[in-house]
Image (cartoon, rainbow, N blue to C red; front, side, top):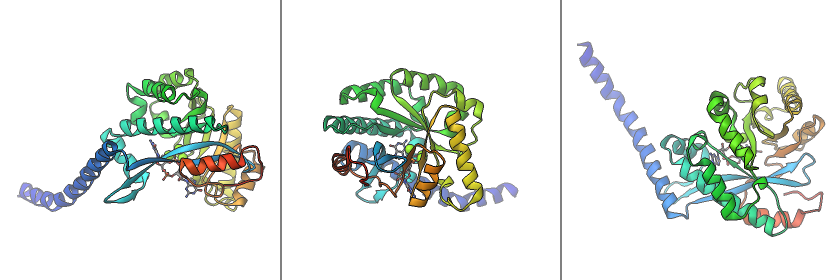
Length: 285
Ligand code: C2E
Ligand code: MG
Ligand code: MG
Ligand code: MG
């Protein structure tokens, strides 16, 4: 009887699970199609600024999916799905190619800035990663020093023994490395010290209630000091107000990224701004 009940219960739950599965499968098929079609996926670029907010010192490539049926799908929806299905490797290759091409174009136009690209865990374990990076910079004619890869803290820390050799290979190519969303994981300082990275990007959740929240203020100041003591530069993500910028400047943060200074934008928009502000302090995007 219990068995029959169990089966009944399973039948009640199945449709919901099945429906979610169907939604996922459809979106996955949509992403496949997008990769093949070539005009639904594009990369936008969010500028990075020095601490004064006066100078663009880099740009982060952020993938966008304009689906004909779903509209603009946020990366928070399709990246996890792509990661799960393995499609992220191909998507990542696309972003890497686009980012390097753009960075080379900016350099060509006389306003060279480095570009950063997010790497997902799955990509980090793919056999072709090093070859893909090589191919992207070579095809674009970009100096490897103008490319930086962003890795998430949790994944690196959880897989340090497998990941560390890959990170050293990337560094050996001359490509930079950053830890993204820092502070959301639980890094031990001992491990952090072993990483061949240059930059810590502090997750924007730390900044949301600053200035004002005493605990977050203390945490932010501590992270900045710790990062500097370990020899890393520090960037604060999600800077939305001038008060936040000032707070970070007072505590010695090196770089800023956020809506206050510049939203993710088309490469043409960013190029126009770079042309306008290059060498001219005081201009903001
Ligand atoms: P992320 O790498 O931490 O990128 C920063 C995200 O914060 C971007 O969201 C950006 O638009 C947003 N942001 C920047 N400044 C502000 C601000 O002042 N306020 C607020 N509220 N948000 C701000 P986006 O573009 O939606 O991307 C979300 C995440 O998706 C990224 O977080 C990254 O983890 C992932 N992602 C995006 N593109 C790629 C990609 O090409 N490959 C991989 N693997 N992941 C990507
Ligand atoms: Mg990032
Ligand atoms: Mg981040
Ligand atoms: Mg992230």
